[in-house]
Amino acid sequence: MKVCIIVEGCYPYIIGGVSSWVQMLTENTPHVEFIIQALIVSRADSGKFVYKLPENVTEVREIYLQDDDWIGNGKKRGLLTAEEFGALRSLLFGKNIEWERLFKMFADPCLSIDGLLMGEDFLNISKEYYEAQYSRVVFSDFLWTMRSMYLPLFYVLKNQPPYADLYHSIATGYSGVWGSMAKAMHGRPLLISEHGIYTREREEEIIKADWVKGIYKDIWIQQFNKFSLCAYRYADKVTSLFEGARQLQIELGCPPEKTLVTPNGINAALFEGLPQKAPDDSFINLGAVLRVSPIKDVKTMINAFYYAKKVEPRLKLWIMGPTDEMPEYSKECMELVENLGVQDIEFTGRINVRDYIAKMDIILLTSISEGQPLSILEAFAAKRPVIATNVGNCYGLIYGERDQYGEAGVVVPVMSVSKVADAIVTLAQDDALRRKMGEIGYRRTVDFYSTKDFLRQYHDLYEEITAPYGIKPDRTPFALHPQDGAGGRGPGA
Image: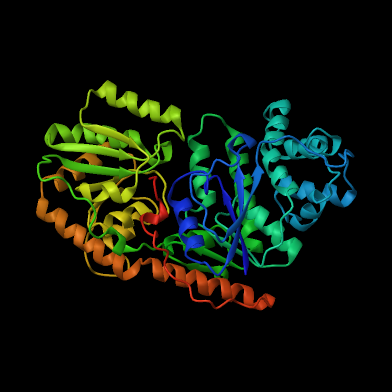
């Protein structure tokens, strides 16, 4: 079986939870050949992999969301037929979008993206859309916003899909649209796996963003809603990590019969016998395994640590993960540490999680958005309690949703410096409570979030989805990869 995994802005270029998930799936499904279709920002990022690709990953293809318009035969076409004009109009207005006609339109090698965006047809449709809903703003600004908004989508649509037995998109955004196009063109099934709910994540980012203002925030949010509805329409199955996320997918327009929950998994055995804190280490170590980025809200973490340390001087914070992916934000975080004058904060950069996690007393996560964080499962596998914000499935992981084992940590409100600080002090001053919570988290992980169960679900799901298309499954037994664990994170965070 050949599976094309479609990823957007992550694997194999960026270390993180979704990338780790893809690595774990591919390296532990050796009887499947994988093609990686990666959507990245520009050619400047081409080939900069941070993961060692498994042998059964035979190709990495790239689509650049910012690129030059390239016409292979030199013949450019900007004008549209009447049917194409209608399809493009349906896309902008977002009503009964004629996706298959759009897929066919962009398959024409002579169609010029530049010619289309700067041409009369796009101008006329944009003007009609403007006059119908947005005439209170300056038209020239509106038109350039529309051009910049549709440019990356058009690059995605111009990149024709290779044949595969199954297309597996790890989001509903641009990657979900490309997967829908692949299904429409090749007549093969599409599986969507959402770790976070893409539409809601983009909405949160846009609301907070400085680069887009006023009504343009609404237009961008609507754009991503269109993408998700496209993916939900064409997908054979749509997975989520927990029941709350599945209900949100349904609320956003996914047919309920397509949805199912497939939790993350981890191999807890790989967290046995890890390096422990030195006997003479008098600190109470807080560990945060993350990429230093705004979505992880590291600034709230630093501020909370500052206040907690005033109460409990033995505290030390380890911020473990890359600082080079968003260097400006990383610089701001380090400047915050300096301005506060707080001691005992370490930025480690990229690390091997298993080299550090058992040296921590408490794991900390202050994200403003998550799915089902692997960092929490890693902490539980190492028998460490977790303080986490109430996002994604953090509440269910820490307090339990399929068991009565008890609390494996503390859940706090998003961006609440005082509540995070209070939780840190409470756990820091109670050794017995930390040990009890760590044991509860370990039991919950072993019983409900194992790698073997996760892999079996996807092994069976691949067979189930492809069977109606006449694809004969390869029933070669799969086995756990010896390097599985830590979410497959290897040398990073």
